[in-house]
Length: 383
Image (cartoon, rainbow, N blue to C red; front, side, top):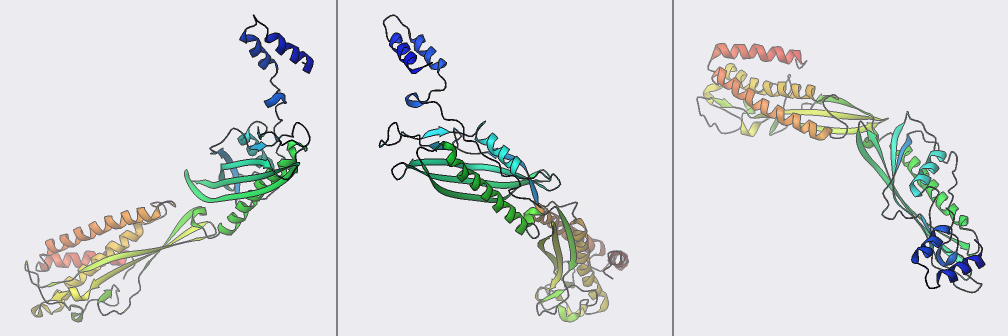
């Protein structure tokens, strides 16, 4: 409809007897007219950059939109009505099909798809081009871009890193809106390049990027210590290890206080998280006592078997901490759970040993426990 015909229609619509439906018909018939009678701005076509990056550690499996403002990607200044006048307020200009669809398409056409690599999800946190009047005849543009990156490992989401970028540009007010597109395109490419570089640097040594887990168990090596005796089959208890003042009770002629702990150090290497697990079995010498009348090999053997039992519990603990019993995401918590279970088992076994041997006074039961403990120590390769 030509401008004279539009004007005639508006004049006709203003005559008495015309209803509001006539004006509504005009708006429906003229969908291409924007503010102040201007045609609605065309979408801002985002041009792909083939092979902007060539990832070797990941592929983009999904792009999600988490922007708080999704109406449009750009708010651009239209040209002034006449030379010398200020430009009208910015117009909302989106990408073809909407911001999310266009950015998904941009990523798909700019980044090779290699499903054998890590599946990465990009979350679009912010993406906005905002123009304001600059020098006479110019628009000053500001871009804000924020992305976060994550990947799915065994069904769990692993947050990786974030990217925030900003850019400024200027364009003549009389230039088409497409002149603002390179700022957005270049910012997206910069974000992809940043993440590709981050992955290349971190893939070898970052536990977040490990594919699988290996456990390397070991025993804490024997080291002389004034207060603590660490377990070693080559260094059994001696009378000199009982340094506390005797406190006889319940028929006991001596007491040792063995216990165990563990340390675990995780190190990622070439996509594998190596877990170095070390157990420490020890006796606190300043808490252990032995009556002078009990200083003979039989009593010393009974106390040594308490020490041996803790070593057996530690060996069982190490065999429970396997890649099958752990996960890459919470191996610490699962290890701690296994440790607490082993700790309870240790106390129960010590009580059972003392109850059945009557603190060593039942010699037949003591012999049975001696044989059982020796056999299990050999089974685990301790002796």
